[in-house]
Image (tube, rainbow, N blue to C red; front, top):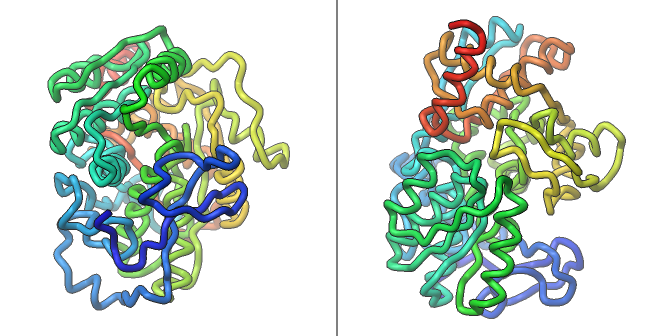
Length: 397
């Protein structure tokens, strides 16, 4: 494998066993735990001046902290998305600054590209010809795009409720798409059955591949650099599987340990009240979630009733003095509309849960008034413009 100098291999987050990344590709063979890329941080010589001297042109500018070298990456120059000041929201929240990290500017218009560029690069390094995953929509579209760029075949299982744009683009990228049942669990079952019949298909499933959360780390790297090396007081993240939240948690600890920042940001998980297993577990003081028996939210990307890495997510919230918040679907959609009206930015419904959650946190008095708050917009509003428009119509607009 063509790896970076400091990349040491993979370690199971459950049992702690270390593995050679060339030999193990997915879950821990001993306990089926999540594998996490590890590094020899003493071998990394990285300072602010070095990073500032580089072009702000791709998330691969942080290659020392990624498993693979930029020259070997399957990439479309994803990342380096804008961090947009939102003064009207800051006034409403009663804080110093609110900024939205606009991940809708990525090649397939979502932050999923950050995870798939690393995961598909790993698949390429392992000699895969076919990749496979189940998805609520965006990850499947991104996987089909990066697979196409790598010359691989992709097999994507989506629920029928996935938006038209996402389904269409899987096909446009040449993906083999199966639309199964109504919800992500149905797509997941079909993915499992198909994978059992095709040993040569390389899974890109969340927390099955070790590499998707690794790509999401770069969101945090960019945020602090865009804030001129100031750590935000809070980052509010729309949480389904929690891949991005875990990635940013890992990134913040890496930057702190490398001396690039002093403090960790407060990480807040925002969910829809119709499917909020992380919020329930956090509020009840538990270390792991209970699956939601009957999930029901219009935010398809957040309707993950059984997030497999909940202990890791809850650790991130507690270790950073963050928190968890859930809001109702109408409030989420209204938040997306208000951000568009007041700041011009287009948020997809699942991302709008972060804005709605931040509003709720502000109204609760969670913030003192001098904070810098970052909200993650994980996808472009035009991915599900019909959902936002239907909310307006229900309001008589």
